[in-house]
Amino acid sequence: MKKRGLLIILSGPSGVGKGTVRAKFSQDESLNLAYSVSMTSREKRSGETDGVEYFFVSQEEFKEAIKNGELLEWTEFVGNYYGTPLKYVEKLRDEGKNVLLEIEVEGAKEVQRKCPEALSIFLIPPSMAELERRIRGRKTEPEEIVQQRLAKAEREMNMLSQYKYVICNDEVDLAAELISVIIRWHMK
Ligand code: 5GP
Image: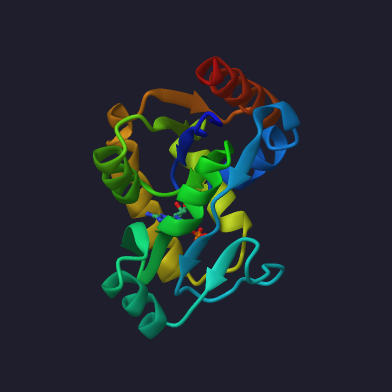
């Protein structure tokens, strides 16, 4: 029988660069990774494609998915819903893929409760000032949302002790390499 794939949680405050770091270590085919595409009710940002970054749905569709038990975990983040489709994760793990969830801390807590074997990694910014610079650099959201993301980031940073590994994203290549090493270690 095929060995079941790992469940890997990658968290970190909004703007820390999870996507950039992930893009880097995902190039390493020996990690045998599959990205779990989440469902969200937030507006699509320019450059995002349905089914790639997220499955973009309405609030009603999202609530329906919750009601039908289709989500491994879900949360409300700065006024929008985000959740992990359960069936997809299970299917990929059964196929032997190491499935990567890029989710915030509340969702991560829920996944750790349901799947204690999950490998959890938290990415931190070099400083809060640098995080703010990165969030503002995105220039896609109004000030009110930026403030909410920063406040959430402060709260998230206080919850990093729930993670197995904490990595600083000062230098993307280094952070990606460290994550590759950690995943490879747990694949043994
Ligand atoms: P963004 O709007 O910047 O794409 O995402 C906001 C936050 O929601 C990020 O921290 C991201 O990792 C998190 N997130 C994305 N998908 C999910 C999900 O399925 N579940 C949970 N709990 N958080 C998610």
